[in-house]
Image (cartoon, rainbow, N blue to C red; front, top):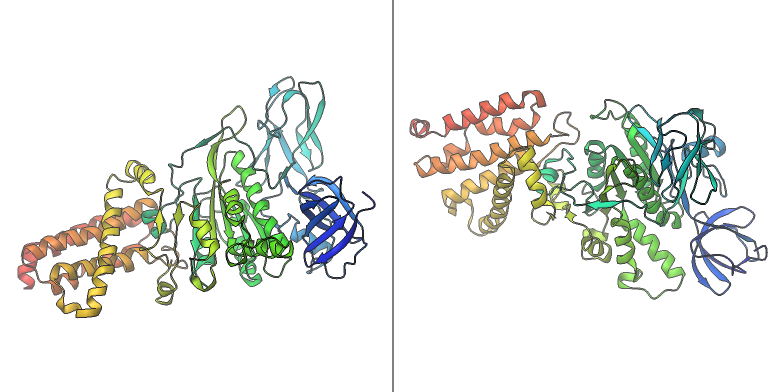
Length: 589
């Protein structure tokens, strides 16, 4: 392999000859600088390599050396709270070595080799172990107990195991396999990023990932192990919505991939997350978060790898039995990287220049989500939920990336710039969004929160869709031409929009709403409509109903602290009954 040399350079694509012994997806080192690359195409002894670093200054004739290993990530203690680039280089450590700018060819191990960890064994000498078994624990942060698992490919008898302090490189156990070969086991392992990690069994997605965002949980819920897409034009709130989900979702671990987004947005994440107090643990949010930063000014080829790096790390924590939420922001930038590499490879372009395999690559990524029983004897149950932002040019979701995504995902949260300009956040359009998990998760909400949940959701969606039709009529004939019943529908829908769906991310109480409080809010806005309809039938005036003092109380309920909701809910229901009773109507009349 010493005779392998560069024959062509086209941006991040390098073609090398003399690579007959190399394999597809092998990692290679390019030139004297040792730039990291990956073989993506082979023709005879010629290999096309996508280089994950800046290629300016390379010359033909420079050497290329294959490692004969696929692109892999290091998995073990030290992942949590760390910030990596798209190919799992630790940016904080690199800054200590090379300063603020990434140096080409720099080779820093992903996990700190000097940091000491305390390993607690979980198995005994002579015990038979299988792939995926937990052999011990390391307390990685105050909130994450890192389970040290045997590689899925290894099994046998424990010959030696030692507890105490160790580093990422130390051997903590020796396993003798069925052939009598001894294998040293450390607290870290490697896994190729393009190969999904195996599991015992996939479970049906019938438990919700509670996010605390009302429009999501109540109308368009996502399951644990589910997949969702957030498409929307520039400025409609994709990133803020993903930040909210990362902060508040009912997940043990969050993996946030900034894939090709603007550097200043990623800087906000890096500055904000360490200061955020996790509501579930009272500690910093970074104590259960892994960040992967691959901004738009970083080499384009590394965007493609960043998605796989992130989901492999997420699968690793899922295998421990944790509920993991992965945020990818955004898959459109990842698709653009695919398009650029495809163009340089001179492949036949598909729609809008994207490669013909765009749909299958997206499917390979999203299909790695799910709720599973992990390998190992203890039957750990973990889940990996994937939420991908899509940034269609001009907000046009008929473009290929959005359409390919919609064919795969089960939840569609369509962001609407018109709602964003009206300052309605989250700007998720309730007429175009959907969730295919709604029916199966409705059973869970009915059993665990309140048996009325599904019927209230149905009433709210019905009122919102009726309002859209009535608005068209109002544009033509004016509000005064509507019947009192239709005007009441418009008022009830306005209450749903303003008092229930509108949610302030920066308000200390309104930023998160528990499922039980969401039920109360749904009950209040629907009860107002039902009781008002009865009062109308008994002769109360529509103007009186619209101006009732209880409307203000319903509107302020979102700002009521969790511990006071039961008391306030009961008071508002009583107030509704009193103000909308026939006697009250006659008195007002």
